[in-house]
Length: 191
Ligand SMILES: [Zn+2]
Image (cartoon, rainbow, N blue to C red; front, side, top):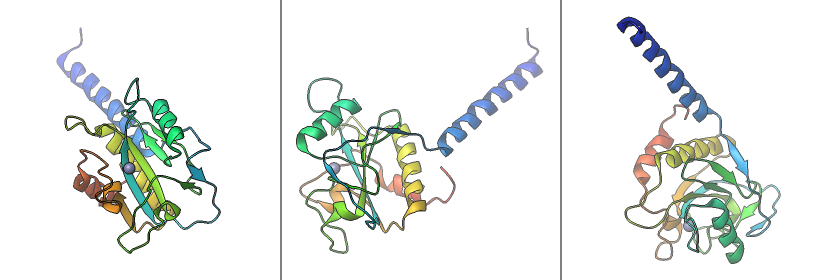
């Protein structure tokens, strides 16, 4: 039997190990490659200054959160996204950032530019538009880390929702605490 003091010590060590692995896990951005050759166009030296956040789910038969079924739907529609973030926070890369992904559609940035695909990086969160559904905390953690990482590599002027650039046509990302997310982006500490 462990004495009370030993028990407490054991617990503090356990908590320390668990919390540090959590922090380390957040520091390194793990990305799974699922490169596609549709819904995109190769580009050289494009200027990236916007990040567009979307949400998506598989509306066909099968698991609505399944990333491969969503990619299959993208193929049917000839669209894509640079990244998709799964319910568990896993980040999948579909299109290299240097290339153009067809994710924004007919839309415009606050400064009036309309060819949004050409200057933006698109990120999809897997979630449905059901009012009881919402992005998971894991997804928001990964999204925050990914956007902060993108900001290190490009001078980003706009972080916007799809609904911000295509109002009336698009309503995603659904059920997301957008203000809370932006606060986390402004927070300078490493995610
Ligand atoms: Zn969208």
